[in-house]
Image 1 (tube, rainbow, N blue to C red):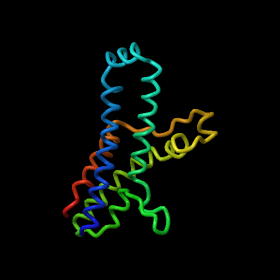
Image 2: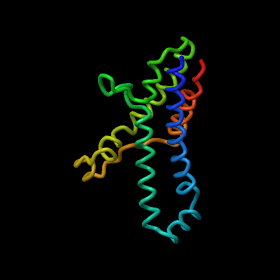
Image 3: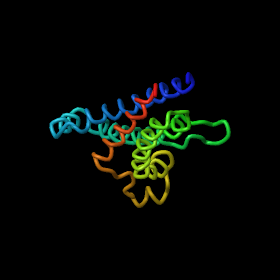
Length: 156
């Protein structure tokens, strides 16, 4: 029980960090035309680069949080899939599985962007300017809500 609590606490700290970075992005780059104009006037190249950096970083964090539970023998990963390996009541396990399903659906939309554009520079993806990592605002909102479900499971 103590191990589970430590794992979930550490996982939730990772989730809070990822959500914080996403919030910083939203405040800077999703606050309307007036904000865009101001940022362009202040330092267009800098804020253009920062926009790309934050997009890539948020996407990386979303994928890291939903990576497999393990990368091999004795190489556990602090992820949603690892959280599912912990001992839970059957009711809690069902809720966690449902939340993780939502997370995995979102991951399927962004994991190629992580693999081919963020973590590596896939030649074909870069040259073709392939559109990888597309999702709707609602799909991303569901992702963050599902993470909240996993973070709410500490004592169940």
